Each structure stands twice: as C-alpha cells, then as structure tokens.
Length: 379
Ligand SMILES: Cc1ncc(COP(=O)(O)O)c(C=O)c1O
Image (cartoon, rainbow, N blue to C red; front, side, top):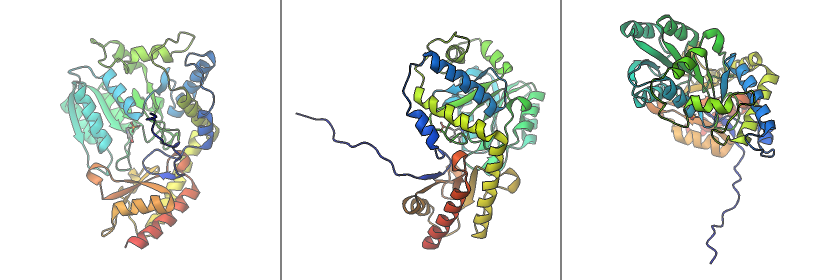
C-alpha cells in the first residue's frame, strides 16, 4: 500500500517584507543560491570563502582576521560570543533596553557568569552614565555587552561611547549588530569593538540562517587563555577557526551551508557595489520619507528623534485600533508584512522595517498607502 503523503511543492505568495526581518531578498541573491552545489572543501568554494571574509571585513569596517559567517541565525552569533568569552564566575555587565538585551543577560546566566544587569526603559537608548556607574561599582568586570540597534523598540545606542567607557575600565565589549549592520554607521576598528555578531536577513537582505561575526585580538586572547574548554563543541571558536582559516590549512569542522553562503556572497557583492556610505544614506532617506508620511496621517513614533533607527520604525497603535487586524489586513489585502510589538510593547506598536533591499521609495509609498486604507477601514 502506498502510504506516501500527497503534498505539492510549496509556492509562497510574493510579499513585501517590511517587518523586523527578514527583509526582501533580491533576485540576484536567490539566483546565486540556485547555482550548483560543490563540496565544502572544494578549492573553488574555499576561494569564495576568502572573498566572503574580505567582503565581511568591509561590511564591519574591520581588519580583524577572524571575521566570517557562522552557520546558523543571529542567535548563534550571540551565543558564540558568550560561550567563548564568558568563563564561569566572570563578571559581565549587560546593558538592556529591550528583548535582545534581556536575551544577552540570559546567555550570561547560562554560561554561569556573574550577571550585572543595567536596565533602561524600552524605547530609550542605553544610558552611558549608568554603565559608568555600574563599572565603578564593579571594578572586576570582565565584559560589557549591549545591543547596537534594539529591534524590539527601534532604538539606537551609542556604541562608540559605550565601548570607550568599558575599555577605560578594562572590560571587553560584545556588541549585537543583528539589526544595525549596513543600515547605520558601524565602525568596528575605529570604535575598538572586541566581539560583534550580526544576521544575514536584515540589512544584508540575504536569506535567514547565517550569522556574520568578527573578533578582535583581545577577544581572541581571552578565548585562548580560557582555563576550561568551551562547553559547546559546535560553537567552540578554537575549532571553528580551523575551518575558516585561510592559506590551505582548512580542515573539516561541520558541513557548511554551501548554497546559503553563495547567497551571502552575492548580497555582500551588492553591498560593495552600492557602497556602505550610500547604503546608510538610502536607509536614512527612506526612513525620513516614511516618518513624514506617518505623521501626516496623525500617527506617532515611539522613539525620540535622536535615537530612532532608520531601519526599524516603531509606530504607536492609535486607541481603538485592533492591532492584529491591521497587520492581517496589510498582509492579506496588500501583501505587505509589518511587525507586531514584542514583549512589553505587544499590542502597543507596529514595527515597520525598511532594511536592505526593502528600504526603497516604492516600498515607503506602498506601505503608507496601504496603512492609510487599512486604518480608514478599521476606525
Ligand atoms: C537585535 C537582535 N539580536 C538577535 C537576534 C536573533 O537573530 P536570529 O533571529 O537571526 O537568530 C535578532 C533577531 O531579530 C535581533 O533583532
């Protein structure tokens, strides 16, 4: 008896992705991913990996040798930073102003680090003075961690200043750049960031599932000096480095997601063609146009102008509006995905992302027109 399930190929509808990520993936990236799969130690593939490292160094603005994509989503970048850099008993300050700061704090606890949590209100930036005070009260702090672009609220924190404060007190920094990379200025070497991770599915507009990371010399020295082995075999950077190191010394660690890496390579080639400065300017311009349109409709943004992220706009849901119905109408009637509020902001904001390929004049116009019609129907 044939028991095989009769299920057809999955053919998703075309959407415009204006949520907190993933962003729209350009056809060039999708085409690159459809190219023939080669072996993950094939010399051609190894050459492509070297190019990828060069392109990622450009994206992060760093000369760090250890700059490469981890084979899993942004969360693995976060976990890899913590499991490698935090040893049991290490004191770690996490500055949290949203969902992803909280997640960093959870990582510290799971690594059996001693957590010092410095919290700021959701919708506001990390307060540098609070970090200064926490470091003065905890002079034995080894690491400071914070999020550059808090996706749950749409807030930018001042990475340059926070890093400078941490270094003045002898601590290394871990920075979450999942939603910031290529959308807003981020200068890893100039700002002296020690360890940083991102994701492929936001500013880079690649498919989700890869996590670009970069580690500076001080971070690598801390990892090499560990007194006990990293508890995760997969994330142990001492082992992963063997696969991503260049000069023909590459050894098997895990089977790389080959076609996904073709996609990231293409997304990075597109970044180099556009140029970082031009990309930052594009994000800013489209954000300003969106905000002008939203305000003209009488809508208000959650975040004060000076801390707003151009790539993630939290819009306050007007009273008497059924928030889930609005998002459902945007998707079902207009093919546009926007995001819901997370955690403390659930039901209180919509999150409109303009990231990477999704950040275009056409998308701003389409989003404003759709929102206007949906809100008129739902009032
Ligand atoms: C700031 C931030 N950090 C970490 C993550 C986790 O990334 P991923 O969902 O790719 O695992 C996200 C995802 O949205 C994020 O926005």
